[in-house]
Amino acid sequence: QEAELQARIIAAKKKLGKKLVILGHHYQQESVYRHADYTGDSLKLSRFAAETDAEYIVFLGVHFMAEVADILSRPEQISILPDLSAGCSMADMANLAKVERSRRELSKILDFDATITPITYINSAADLKAFCGEHGGIVCTSTNATKIIEWGFRQREKVLFFPDQNLGRWSGYKMGIPLEQMPVWDPDLPMGGLTEEQIKNAKILLWKGHCAVHQMFREQNITRFRAEHPDGIVISHPESPFEVCLNSDYVGSTEYILKTVSDAPAGTHWLVGTELNLVNRLAEQMKPQGKVVQFMSHVICECSTMARIDPQHLAWTLENLAEGNVVNRIKVPEHEADLARLTLQRMLDAS
Ligand code: 13P
Ligand code: SF4
Image (cartoon, rainbow, N blue to C red; front, top):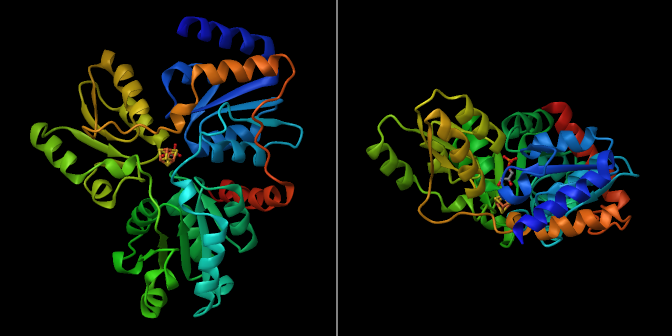
């Protein structure tokens, strides 16, 4: 059955020709990832989405990625997510109601728009990107977070960073900001659970959100690896906990991880802290060069929502498109898209 699905995908893709482009995130399972015309991390895929002329952009990734493709492409282009339930649990940890409430709370003690640059990680819904557009803020990805936070400080004295506290903390730490000036803002508590003094002293308010997949990696995984492989090298994604980033030799986006390990000398041994599909694929690719690529955890850390995009959904989507039926279109309402485009464009210009 798998072979039949693969053949159906290839046939439908051929039928659609240049009308179609398939963009694939590095966490996608091999059975669909192999059909992507372009692969990348969130930043690279946003750039592809902004540049393609294809009528249909089929996104092998999660919901916010297909939204970004819709926002950055032209109105007549159509962005499609083969399974609409492929969300991002981290993105869901912030929503407009909570961000608006946080703004109201903070406004009790400071002038929000004059004091705080809101920065949303690209892993967020379009309305949060629009919120940032409306309040002088910006979007970042795992590749450019430090640069974008620096941009934020050029506008105002503080940053509210959502939804990933780990990316915010690691980026702030690299900029030399003391940990006590990056308190965690809990949107479900009055005043974020912080004192007035903590808020006034803060440089970055870190939203209480995280990625459930990267949260599984532990400092002990690294300690054990280093004891067993003294010459081993550790590389992690910045969504990992702070102690993991701190004890890694390299920290960066999915594209950075792939490039760094691929460019490394033959015979090197790597411990990689990011999603399992990427690590398994990289391990296979590096074998001929005698490089060993090891997954950071003994627990299976797979992004279950990324995995919803499977050959069945891809075949069904492409076959419908080939017959002229658009299914699973992702369309961001125009007023939101305009503001979100502004913040994404600010990001692309600043990075
Ligand atoms: P990248 O932009 O590094 O690919 O990260 C996206 C993501 O969702 C990681 O969990
Ligand atoms: Fe979201 Fe984490 Fe999955 Fe990335 S790995 S898409 S942050 S849940």
